[in-house]
Length: 283
Length: 283
Image 1 (cartoon, one colour):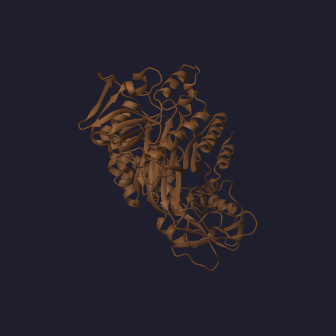
Image 2 (cartoon, one colour):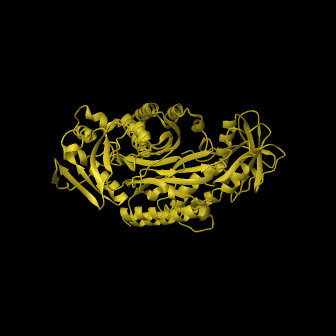
Image 3 (tube, helix red, strand yellow):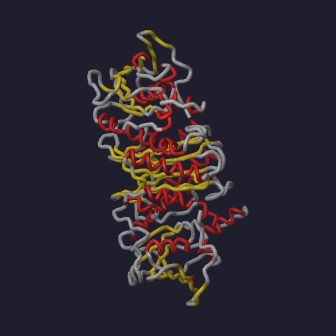
C-alpha cells in the first residue's frame, strides 16, 4: 500500500459528512470545526529553527485551517515528543506566546519520549456559524487571495542558508488570517488556505469544484520572483472564490477566474505562460 | 527542563477551566469532551504487535478517556506516520474495525513520513451531559472498579514472549467502558479510567481529591497474581467513587474507601500489606 492507497483507504472509512471526505482543510460538525496537522523536523521545519518558532508554527498552521473555514478558535490539544531540555523549554515559551497572541486555550494533549526526528501534532477546535468548503467555486467566480505571496518561501531560503532578513518571520511565525476568514466565510463560494503553494492550492480548489481556473501571474501580489513565489509554500494566506462583481470585505487581490472545464492555466500580461514542473509542495 | 518541569510549564499555559489543569482524563468544554493520547512503538505497544491491533488500541485508549467522563464519542482525528506498506494496510483495516465496533466517525487528521519508532496520535471528541472529574471523591466514599484487573498485563507478557493465550486480546484489543461510563457519570463523585495500573491510578484519584484511599487487595477481581495485576497497566476499566450505601448501576466491585488524609494504603484480608515499589506505569 502506497501513500495514495492509504489515503484512499482512510477516505473509505471517513464516511461521515462531517469529515468532508478528508478533502477539506478541516472537519465541520454542526458549528464545530476540527483540524489536526502535524509538523515534522526536516520536512515542515528545519532542525535549526528556534523551538519557540516551531511551537508558533504548529499552532498557526492549524489555526490557518480554522481560518479557512471562517472559524473562531476555541482551543487546542497537543501531541509532543519530549527530549531535549533546552529545546523543550524554548518550545513551551513559544507556545505560550502563540496561545496568547491568538487567544486560544490549551485544553490537553499528551507527551511521549522523543526518538528520531521530532514529529509534533496539534488538534485545533473552533466554531463557525457557516463553514465554506473548498469545493463550491462556480463558473465565472473570481479567485482572490489575501496578503502577499512568497515571503515565507524567501524566509525558508534565508533559514536554510543561515542568513537573516525580514522574511524569516513570515516563514517562522506565520499569521493565520482568522479575522479575514470570519468576514469572508458567509459570502464566499469556496475558501481554503494557501499552505503548499498558490498554484497547487488553486488547482486543488478548482479540481474539488469540478472546474478549471485561470490565474494571471502579473496580478498576484508577490515577494521576489513571481514564479518562485506562487510555487513556494507556507504563506497561510486565504484563497477564495467570489461571484463576479462582489468585492471582499477584507484586503485581498483578484488574481484569476474559474470556468467550466478542468485544470490550471497561467498567464502573464495576457500571454499564456507554461506551468512550472512543480506547482508547490506535495508532502 | 525535565519532563516534570515541561508538564508544569504546560499546566501554567492551560489556564482555561475546560482544560481541568491538564490533570484529568480529558478536557471538558460545555457538553464537549476532548482527549488526545499518543502511543509509541516500544513504549505503548511492541514492534511485533499486529498493526490492526495497534489501530484498535490507539482508538480504544482515547475512547476510554471519554468513557471516564461519561461521554458518547462523536468522532476522531488521527496523526499517522506513513512508512511500511504492509503495516499501513494492516493498520487501516484494524482502524476500520475499531471505528465500526465503537460507532465512531473518522473526521480528519494528517499523515507524515515515518522515521524511527512509530508514534501515533489520536484526538477523540465526545459529548457528555455531565462529565465527572477525577478529583471529586469525598471522605467515606467507596472506591469501585468495573471488570477484572490484570488480564492486559498477562497479555503483554504473552506478547513479549511470543506466546498465545486468551489474555492477548485484553492487551491488544481493549474494550473501553463507554456504556458503563454513561450510566455512572451522573451519580459518581469521581471517575477515571485504569490505564497505568489500579494502584497508581487510585493513588492519583485520591491525591486529586485531597484524600487518602485504602484498598483491600483481596476484594479486587484479578487475573493472575494479585499484586502483579494491580500494578499492571492497560486494563481500561473504570475506577470511580460513590457515596457509601449507593450501588452502581453497572457490574462493578467495591474495593476500597476514601478517607481524610493522604496516600494509598493496601490490605489483604484485613492485614496491612506494604506497597510495592512500583504502583504502575509512569511513562
